[in-house]
Image (cartoon, rainbow, N blue to C red; front, side, top):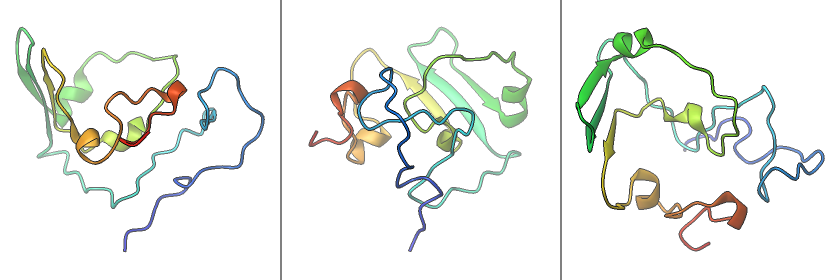
Length: 122
């Protein structure tokens, strides 16, 4: 049986931050990488990331290529478990909506955190 990672089942609530959607909380600088499943092992020497579809120049980067790209810093809010997406290997840009990995596994098609749309039944 797979063990959930620390924090997956929630954290104690402090005060309610009015900027945040219902049921969410500010993790500050202690941003967790959460998973309800086993984290895949990643071999940086074999891993690649591709961007395809509606792009001018479809491209594939190696782990080393990706880390050589110019970095930037994001200072906005993130309403997801971004760090848990390291197993991502491709991004396909489309001109129409199509269920992705999360939607095929029961998550809401829109996922509006302010309307508490987390799962297909919400």
